[in-house]
Image (tube, rainbow, N blue to C red):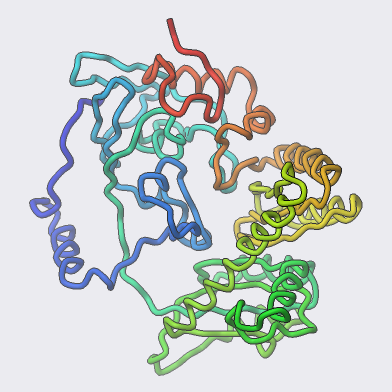
Length: 421
């Protein structure tokens, strides 16, 4: 049971370690950082919480959910709940009862569907005897409005970024699997540039070399993997044999790579990664001037580890068979590759929309998610129906009805529903 209550004052915490860490942070805030690191630079913390946002570093640190320690959430009737992590849990039968300060009582049962074994923001989070805070995280604002967030920070480490150039997209898939299974390596992120993505960046460099802000991309490169890992340039022994050996085991060489560890270089690498989606958006914007109905199609799907090879082959073969312009990049470490289809005509757009459905159905058959990080919103409801049965979606709706009976918060996000009478 939950009754509205103020957050604890960390300065008065009974835990000595909490007080010591708080004092260390006050002395040097810049020595700490927020691990989720969402890709969108304009993202707000509240928005990140209600979408359970993730980014490249989700590979090591997990999404926003893993770093939220408390929230204040306003319900539709105007009252608020303070929910610290680790205090309010569902009963063994999956029930929650919340007593509001205005006398209202909210009672509901959490859904009983399984969560995919991969990144997913499709629908409400659920787990046996789950923490109440996790229900609101990733709920896309349909249950309440988050106005305060307590998050965990960790001490900053020196990092090194490496872009490893490869001979093919298939070699990138092979290297990804090898890097993931090497227990001696602890990577912060594992990102993918397809051959098509590198060609896009090469074209930019030819037009205006300074645009990309990096050296010329090697002409022989047909794909690349971008990684980041902890790095101490002052250590007596800089032993990266594990990385070198893993790359060599896939018939590649660290000699065909870029690397940087100074803050200025790391910023350049980050900007280089962001150039791909930014350029895609600008291409579509130009095409829309001639054909206003055009828009890009970007997948947001993820599958369990064992299906990476199979889903990549499906993506590649189907896009090529339909002769669509496409570019792949993104979070390959989580089997979450963004396939961006760039239609040139309305016919291309129609083909792409049909193909999106083909991808979604196969991803669900593999036990994956139709939305790994961007949420369902108002336009992906039909894909949510592929993941969950009518009964399971109704279980989500009953929670919505319990806390927002008039359906006034983010109406028709995730699923459409009418206000209770």
